[in-house]
Amino acid sequence: MKRAFDLFVALVVIMLLWPVIAVVAVLVRIKLGSPVLFRQQRPGLDAKPFYVYKFRTMLSAFDERGEPLPDEKRMTRFGSLLRRFSLDELPQLINVLKGDLSLVGPRPLLMEYLPLYNAEQARRHSVKPGITGWAQVNGRNAISWEDKFKYDVWYVDHQSFWLDIRILWLTILKVVRSEGISQAGSVTMERFRGSDTIRKDGK
Image 1: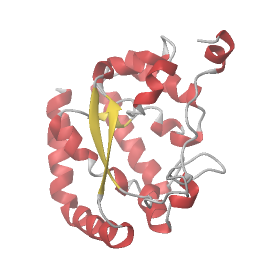
Image 2 (image 1 turned 120 degrees about the vertical axis):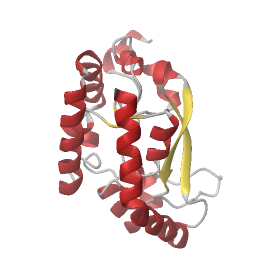
Image 3 (image 1 turned 90 degrees about the vertical axis):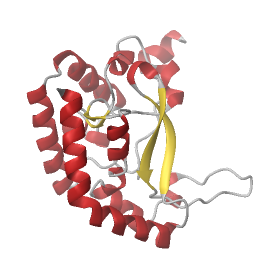
């Protein structure tokens, strides 16, 4: 039922918003250049890798050593606007159609985080990741990593069709209100470096 619901909603949203998707794609090409889509490998169900798609929101800028500049120096006003209203996430509907993502589930994070999870946190990969999730409607990027993972695992243990409907509705409200886009003092979410308990144990 969840898969059928994902396919139905993704197709309906694509059909309704294709003019918006087309306009955003053109503006990204004009303002940020090519490629229009940002593609990155992320862990999916059972931590199996897949490529997630998003509209680009940052410039491809590097320092004299060839290293990417910090996010705050690469982020543009246009990119911030896309993130504010989650328009950069629209290409992930392709991932939903492909079966990589569900509409609702723990957000797929970076592959490099996998060795940093403790056993409880790693349970977030026991369900298919989603475009939005319980952590996103309970603070999004404004909460700590530990709290985010607790919400993700809570979803794993309590997932249901009606919970998904509730999360989708709350997501719409969060997007309209532009809440929890980033952590205070940062344009993005601070990188996860492992929980305090993991670092103290040296694991």
